[in-house]
Length: 225
Image 1 (cartoon, rainbow, N blue to C red):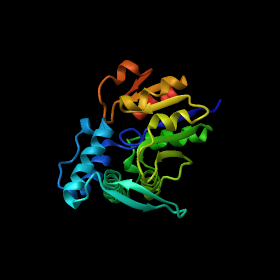
Image 2 (spheres, one colour):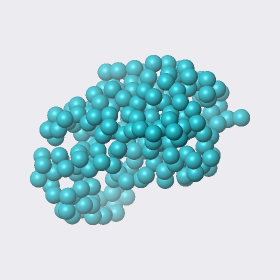
Image 3 (spheres, one colour):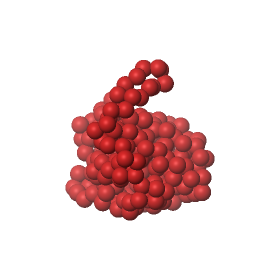
Image 4 (cartoon, helix red, strand yellow):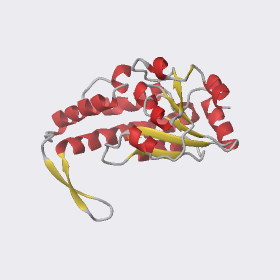
């Protein structure tokens, strides 16, 4: 019977060092050190820290009110902090696309792309749920030459949809695959099995909540197939 399998993106579907390399351009422009694995494990804290560096660079205060026009013509007001996060994320997007162009299929942990191909070939549905903007995810995959039929549930241009909300909106979830606690915990509400991959940005405590712990894509294949 076909399964619906959720994959986190950064540090799970693609290698953690790819994200770190993508961060190098942004870090050089906003004059901060490259985020550590521990910072990646706590995305909300990381986003706030990056916004503060953008404020220092641009002078845009977090309390400012910025007029924003959406593609449908509707106007809304954004806070300075929301715009800071947009700027920070767009700088990351440039770095991410450059790395995807350079690395191609090497953005994936060795052997994972083949596992994904086999899963899709057997009729299973792969859904990417991530705190990264959806256009960054889909763009990286396109540039890397990956044309597998993923469903992507990333962030909109104005960040702020919790991964849990994206997960709970799905009708069926059989497995959730992630590299940190925040990826795995929402799965329990869905009755889904959780798989912790050890090659990413662990925050600690993942093995205590995971149904399966895998250290290679081959081990992941054994669980899913």
